[in-house]
Amino acid sequence: MHRVSFPIPFLTTTLIRINSEEHKYEYLMAYQYTIMHSPLDYTVHAKTMMQERMIQEDWVTSTVSAPEMVEEKRDDERHYLKRIPEHAGKFLRVIVNHSVHPPRVITVFFDRRVQP
Image (cartoon, rainbow, N blue to C red):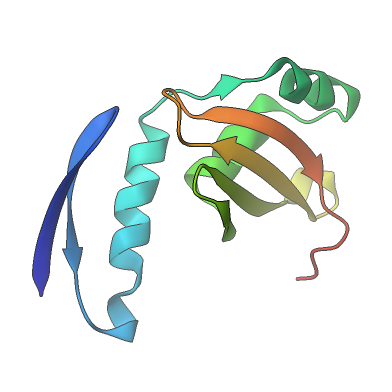
């Protein structure tokens, strides 16, 4: 077990790196804690898409704080996906830029390409 400390713009945290497949969620849980306790900023585009697509803000925050899947696309961009039961179980994709503080939601949409 190896303890790693590092600063995050809005929180300093300590992660425990365990070289074991059964403990792979140690990083995920610490990361989710960081996201849940930081506010999200929204681009004008993201707010417009939420309104046009009838996507509730609590669905967006829930997807970012407790995703079912996370895709790293670039150094500053992550895609969070989560099934939304209130929307016929479709997957909501939330694209977030983490290089700014607070993290900025770029866009949101229900992704038909994602299969459960």
